[in-house]
Length: 113
Image (cartoon, rainbow, N blue to C red):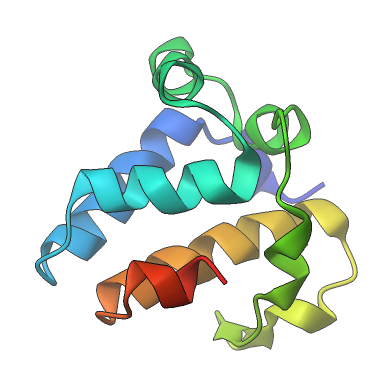
């Protein structure tokens, strides 16, 4: 297992927020795309941040992973997300890709496929 999965979601979340805020987007936008991908509701997402749950647990215990996530395509960290073999890594890269699209100014309707 890749060491990134031992990182807490709470340590990654502010990096996502900072990335999109530099481009004029909001933490609420990050919450929207993460909730769309994982099925966490707002209290569940807040609880995950406050509890310090690791990324692996956050992704594996997502209440309702979005079946449309497979429509997410493109490159993150030099790798096409649709070609990632490890399902857990693919979920993480899907989340990264959604945040990247927010930061690039893409409309939420388009991001949420």
